Amino acid sequence: MAGIKIAFDFGTSTVLAAVHGRGVKIKEPSVIAYDTFDDRIIAIGRDAYRMIGKAPDSITVVRPVREGTVYDYDAVEHMLRHYIQKLCGNRIFKPEVIISVPAGVSELEKRTVAELATKSGASKACVIEEPLAAAIGAGVDIHDHTGVLIVDIGGGTTDLAIVTGGCIAVSSSLGVAGKTFDEDICRFARREKDTVIGDVTAESVKKQVGAAKFPDAELAVRAVGKDYLSKLPRSIEISSTDIFLCIREHLEQIIEGIRLLLESTQPELNADILTNGIIVTGGGAMLRGIDEYIQNRLGLRTRCAEEPELCVVRGIDRAFSDRKILSDNGYVFKSYSDIKDFEE
Ligand SMILES: Nc1ncnc2c1ncn2[C@@H]1O[C@H](COP(=O)(O)OP(=O)(O)OP(=O)(O)O)[C@@H](O)[C@H]1O
Ligand SMILES: [Mg+2]
Image (cartoon, rainbow, N blue to C red; front, side):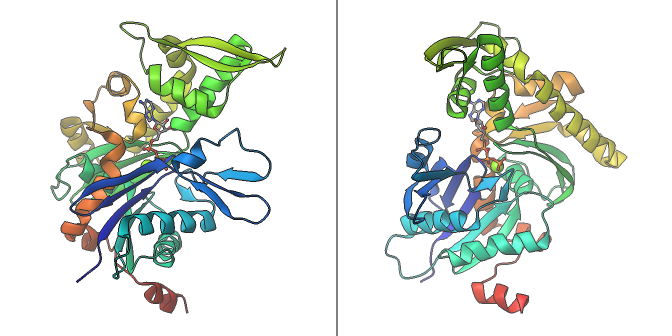
């Protein structure tokens, strides 16, 4: 009897894992907290997220993936081991794992991520590039030879890719994403309302009332922070219009990134995008009106995928039953010893 098969999307903001045939089982913030003095792990995922901005000096809270790439290897290994154990329980056989990496990363980086998975309890691991997985998860027939443009707005990066014939034809990655919008909201609160708010509060405000357009009906929430001058707690109101205006400059950078990618694309693929349009995936696709914004600025049909934050993990999961996706792209399952033998 073989072990189970696990798809991992280990992002800057969120860790998602799906067990093949059983759906998405893990959806937690990509955060770990450990003891500053002896490195003992204190909390992982949701529990660690609650400590951001509040932990005492004796506890270090980190996001081990930044801008889509592994920043703290030990932390990622700990987290993968934790989730693999949680999903496998006391099974004897180790699982096979497919894990996503940003498009265009080096072979060394792909090998490092696969190695981390095998060190954390996978019998064999394989990587897949995120925009390809996002396209599959958004329901695109990626074996078809007509191009579709994927805009995956995550926490740390916005990944752009044209996917056709089962492969990524062109791709690029922008440093503007969900976290940038949170920083814009913090800056707005500080400048316009003389109030310092934390990243977690800014993200929560964005999720509740954030918009990439002037709203039909204004939404507003109260956010609690610290008065810049008196340093005392203070509650302020932030509206959808406030957010749209303060993130607009960065929305424009995403538009510019898409424009540049299209400029570097062959005319036949460009023609496909005119027909098939743009699909927005990733948690950032849940920003109200983002599809409308992209469509109006570029004149290209744009839609948000359903459950956009789950597209990558669902796409990875599909690769377990459609191995052509892996073979067409040279993605190969490797055990820990395969990886080590290669390095020697
Ligand atoms: N309703 C919402 N409105 C606006 N933004 C949202 C909403 N829900 C989630 N987000 C944002 O989506 C981002 C997380 O998206 P996602 O889970 O796709 O990122 P990730 O895969 O972890 O990051 P990356 O791909 O950059 O490594 C966060 O910045 C989060 O604030
Ligand atoms: Mg992502």
